[in-house]
Length: 212
Ligand code: URA
Image 1: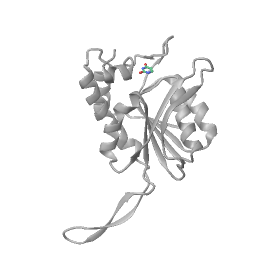
Image 2: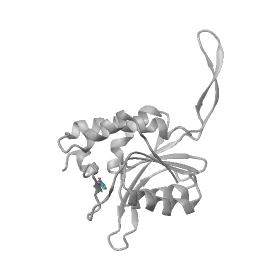
Image 3: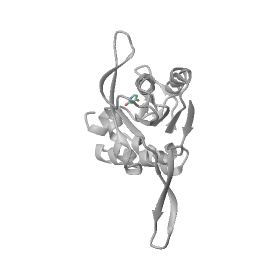
Image 4: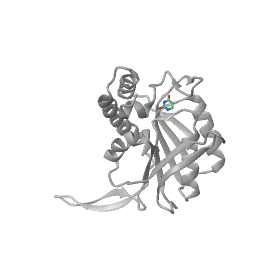
């Protein structure tokens, strides 16, 4: 798995505001959208395109359009939903599928509680959205799920990642043998004893949807 941490002053400034506990939910949602659009620019660098003719007012020339089947954007419920708008702004013709993952408290394995995805993902590039890569259980489980359905190229977009989550993703994803890239805005220090990323930003879902 390739890890890309986007180093850009605008990205770092927006992450700084996101971390601030005094940032309101409305501002938090706005910042998440803006950040995802910035990350998506880098994350879609390898999106597949094919040549297309375009008639300008002056002549006919060749450009590109996204190859079919269109890329699939997959937010992981609930917090990944907050990243969807920012991603679709950059790639409006992509399709969207949904995955809900929780951890089974007995087996400690990620468990899919909701799923709305095409049955066959053969030949699809998939973009998985999850703001916080903590233990890597949900993200790794989702990647496995998509590969099982035939996806052949996966890009995960996170806002903040913990080194423990990146390591776990490598362990889970590398043996699968499908190209996988992880794009994030910040690689933080560690996970604390209750699974929060440090310094992090708290619970992304609660901060997005105001249940803190
Ligand atoms: N999920 C979050 O929302 N925040 C964390 O710090 C870890 C997991």
